[in-house]
Structure formats: structure tokens, C-alpha cells
Image (cartoon, rainbow, N blue to C red; front, side, top):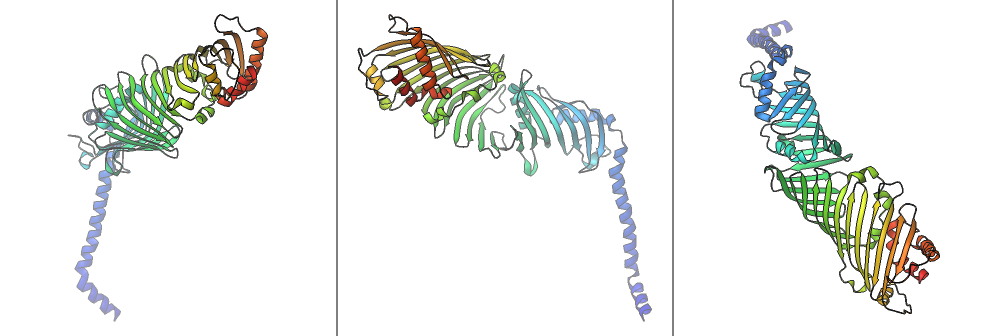
Amino acid sequence: MINKIYKRIHNKYSKFFNFFFFLRHVFGIFLIAIVSFILIPKFFDYEKKQEILKEYLVNYYDLELNNFSSIKFKVFPLPNLAIKDANFKVKNQPVLFTTKNFKIFLKIKNFYNYDDFIARKILLNDSKIILDIDKTKDLFNYFATLKYEFDIQKLNLNLRRKKNSIIVIKKINFSNYGYKKNKINGEIFDKKFEAYLDNDYKNLKLKILHTGINANFNFDEMIKAGSLGGSSKISVLNNYLKSKFLIKNKQLEIIKANLRSKDLSVSFDSLIKFDPYFEISSDISINKIDKKLINKLSLEKILKNPEMLKKFNSNNKVTYIKKRSFNSLIKSHFSELNLAHGRLVFFNKTSVSGGVINCKGDSLLVEEYPRIYFDCFFDLKNKKEFFKKFSISEKLDRNSLELNVVGSLNLFNKKINFEKIIIDKTSSTIKKEDLNYFKETFENVLFDDNFFNIFRKDKIKEFLLEII
């Protein structure tokens, strides 16, 4: 019975089964043909095609391929030409970089025929760029003007100035196509960051993860020859910086900048020159400052890197005008600070209740135990008003005082040396034993803590009570 059923099914569907078994052979042949079509190019010598590849990279990506170690056909993840240890130069720009793994992803028509060669996309993996920081705009402009699909993975960007590294951005990933288009991520200051460029490359949003740092840059002059300008908004935790900027002629100009937090409000203009040497010139206006912020400053931390101080040159003017100064000791303050090769030269003018205090001096901050040499002149036209701010009542033989104090201050050892103190110009210099008394009192009362605490009002009052 079973045999009859089998024969009946076989006779009825024999054509179907024969066709099925025929397709099996066709499919096998088709599969072998596809695999052969993909694998045979692995045996070609692609170094003979290097001139075609170089011409393509220059024409489509403005990349000049200088040298490499090998070119091989790879099947995965998609058919591509893998070029090892390649060196590139961006056409007509001073941008050089190397990449360990460079891939040109192929279209099917170019597996065997390299006439009218056009790739699907290119990928640079594990690359390195060393670039002068004032040439950053050239690199930025290059990526902004790319029209063909371009993918970067694990790029290390070292920005330098005269062979000295200024900032290193590691493991940069960037693509100008697909769902990751214009999204950038990597590491800066050993922290991961994420960034996004809009389609017209005029807005850059940056976030350094787990630090509270966010930035937004709007570019006004993206491709204008020799310049890059715009505006920026940067927030660091609860501190906010807003400014305009212009990069041109090897210098960065920061315009109408405003920095504010709950403890500080500052507006400033700065000019940062990169050539012939690094220099900063700033005009700073302090609108508001909490004295607790000054008390938190540590001079030891500021001066802990003498090699950096040697490279840091600056000319700064700082102005502070106290609003509602009726009840304040300090009404206004002006400082001019010039730092070059680790030497600081300063001039201060402070308007206080009852008079004016002028100080000038200098210090070599890169010494192991730096000292500040000072020459200060106290011109108190109204001593009564001055002492009143410290709640000190004193019988005065005259209501004015001119005092010239010359000496030096050891910043780390918390020691002071008074060379001379002259009262009212024509009076004789204070005797040596009195200078020693002032020295001991100053060190025990004013300079028993860090440098910035010298200016605390309660300490000044205690010192005055000791010496008058």
C-alpha cells in the first residue's frame, strides 16, 4: 500500500522534484561564481594601480598619497582596498598626517575594471596629525568642504607651537555621511567628549562628559581666507563665559568677553599671539568679586609649574571699581601686570577710604623660593576715615599720613624683609629695631597663612592695633 502511494506521488510530482534538484545545482554554481568573483581580486597586484588611486584621491578628496607599505584587497566588512602605513598631505594646505589603516571601499564595477574609478567611500583608521595650532583653521576648512563620503576612526591630533605640544585630542571619530554625520567624539584632557557640527558647518556644540563643561561655537567667517571668527558660549559647572572671537594672522582675538558666576563677574578683551612667541595681552574689568573667592586661592598651586611660567608671556591690565563703595574700604583698584620668561613686573593703584596706595615691584617667579620686591607709597589724606573702616578710634596729632615702605616678601617661607620705612617724606627713616618689630608682627599676624590672606580685613585690623 505504501509503495503504491509513493509511486503515485513520485509520478505526479516528478517534474517538480527534478526542477528542485536542478535549482540546487544552479544555486551551487551561482554561489561558487559569486565567491570566485569576490575572492579572485585578492590575488591581483594592486601596487600597479597606485597611480590610478593617487589620482582619484587627489581629484575627489584633495589627498596626496606620498607613500605606503602595502595595498591588499579585503572582503570584510565590505570589499575594499586596504592600504597600510600611508602618509598623506592635504592638497595646497600645510596638513600632513599618517594612518596605519586606510581603506578605499569599492563599487562592484571596479572589482576588475579601474577605468573611471570612483569608490563608495574612504576610511582612515588609527591616524595621527601633528599641526601648528595657528593652522587649525586649515584642517577645519578641509573637513568642512569635503563633498564625498569620508570616515575617520581613532585619530590623534597633536596641536603644537614651535615643536612644543599645546593640546592633544585623542581617539577622534568623525563621519560626513549617514546617521553619524557630523558627530564627533574622542578624548581631551583624558576625558571623553562629544561634539556636533550642523550641516552648514557654522555651529559646533561640544560637551566634555562628566565634567560639567559645555560649549557652543557659532562661526561667522568659516571659509574666509586667512581667518576664522564667530561667537562662543561656554559653561563650566556654574561658570559662564560668553565672547566673540577672531583667529587671523597667527593670533586669536577675544572680544567683549564676559565671565560670570555666583562669586565673580568679569568682562575683558584679550589678544593672544602665537608668533613669534606665545603672548597674551588683556584688558580686564572686575564687576563683582566675592572676597571668599580670594581666600580660596593658593599661590603654591599657581607657581607649582615653573617651566610653564617661563613660556607664558602676558601683559594685563586689571580694573576694579566698587559699586556702592560708601561702606567699603576699597573704592577702586588698578593693576598692570607684565610677565615675561618667569619674571613678573607689576604696578598697583588702590583707592581706599581716606587715601590712595601705590605699589610697584617685581619677582622672579620661577625661582625655587621666589621673592616679591616691592616699593609701596601710602598717601592717606584722611587717617580718621581710614581707621574708621577698621572700627579703630585713635587720637591723631594730624589727619594726614605719607608712608613709603620698601622691602621684599618670601612667598613660600612666609617671611618679609623691610629695607626702609619713611614717614611723611622729610622725616627720618624708622630705626632698625623698629623695623624688626614690624617684621615679626607682620609675619605673626598677617602672614601666618597663605599669601592672599594678607589682605583680609580682620588681619589688617589686628596688625594696625599692634603697631599704632
